[in-house]
Image (tube, rainbow, N blue to C red; front, side, top):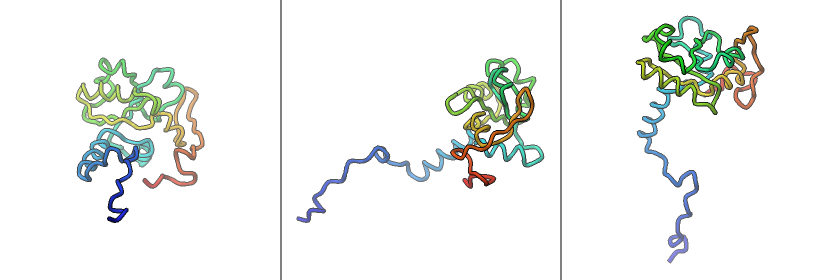
Length: 164
């Protein structure tokens, strides 16, 4: 008997211990994910392209956080005030992209949930304000506009986009 034929398959590594989904299932999953999320670069590109981007950006953080820095043109509506103020500040026919501090915070998801429960179409901006600033996009503070150099770990140096 051939030694190769009798050898047992190596134990699955942590990556493949659970097999990858079938291509059709994976496509459905990632399509659904894109229905719920937008990334910072795509939001920035849509906002700076000129004209109506077709959505409004909502900062769900506190007033103190808003004053520290926020996406230009964003609506400020802390999550706790959404139920009482969303109707006054937001057009229900316009999709809303929510953001909070960053990937370590689920405030944007809570805001998106509150808005969805009121009948708004929503997406969460992945990376939040942290990645907006880290990718070098301009932001407004109580003192005016600011901008930091792009962090090479989050955005390509010397290029307009990451190519993804």
